[in-house]
Length: 314
Length: 292
Image (cartoon, rainbow over all chains, first blue to last red; front, top):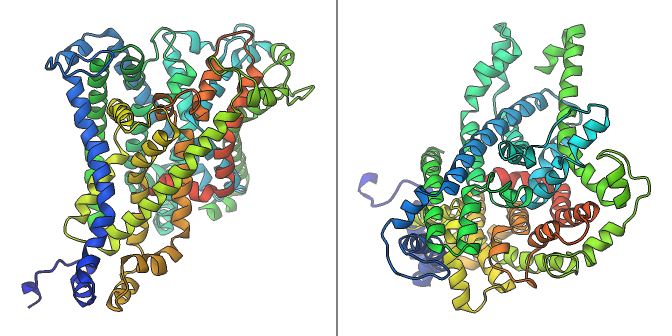
């Protein structure tokens, strides 16, 4: 009997049609939600999807100072592939992204586990670990540029303590400057990963841990073998979010190293901005933006897939 | 767990000591840059070149702050970051209010008035949370030009609203999903309309998620640099852009104390929000990643 009704099995739609039929102004009321959503959908279609398409079209043209619609096929992508600076930027993103994600995960997980041991003043510590996340990457960049300044920053301070041979001049060293980005970004975001892990740990049933303890397992072992596997979804989310931050990193590079020395710390985001807005290479800049989008999609699709799947289950 | 540890005294005490030392060392790593920034911002230049990072200010002065606020050069102009600080507020406040309102209505329509395809609409909008903004910069510049609002505060407000509603919709949708449908359907049976139900039933319980959304949007827009630098002129720049210009202005002596004071000024509003409402800030950060 129930099967013959053309209704979905969710509570909302079960109530929806009946309610609509009984309201006097049913017609308008039924359309109001759609009308309310319409501007946002239109905005989304135009400003997100339309603009993506538009940038793709621009990437197929020879546009320089101004957008022109003189199509050159995938010529800009070929130029990009032959561009040494683009390869530096992409390689930098790999180095920066992998290190940033890995170090944040390790520090975040470690701090969360340590904080979960019924610590006094846990709230205060948590507040301190997390506050950098409230700052602008520009502020972070300005501060760390100061700390990493060889003449006046950490290097000078340690040398002042008597360690004359101490060297920490990465920010002016083309081979090491990329790691200063990692340091500053980890400083900013690792507290956030700690918060994610802590929320995950608090969600784990204590009895699992108690049971493992009764079996005589040591604490580190319990965390590695019992707790961490439970936190796999947290690790997954954290990796997605951090990778996403890494690909979008722009402000931090601008403020901390300005892409330098030379273009040693360029990332795709700064490459795109420099070419599209200051070097009058709109076509090339668009092509690099499309490749960035491709990179985000490669990370995003598995994430959204799992999000939507778990939402259906929940 | 902690109970078990406490019972095994001598080694456990050592363990606890170690535990606290690691946690405190980590706290120093996070807090010291802020301390150095603050101390540097109240030192005269002579103390900076003579002393070290961690030496306490001998003759604290607010001169760097007043200079950063009203006199320091940001590019060609020497008016400090004060004007840009207010610019940021003029951009952030309308953008936050508009995007939060739209997000609330969207979230409500998507959860309490589901229709065929409403999940698809949500998925469609959600995607806007994830795109790298580089992919919209050039078309946006041209569109703002067509609308006659390029390099204006109105233009920046529009940009932040457009790319903010994906997040605010996500917040409100996930919050309203957890509000029982019974009240809403009873009100529908009584003939209450769309806005009346929102006003009477949903809005009164929405305070926590409104705070989350406002804080998230405030922090995001205040801290924005990419849109600010791409779509503003000298008189409409947000404070992040002005700060970057100030630090990179290469005329005269490098005044690190002024740089740090300007950085503090740019950081203060979001820091204050974080200190006052940290719980909601964390909730916003984790809203997209940890469900429930």
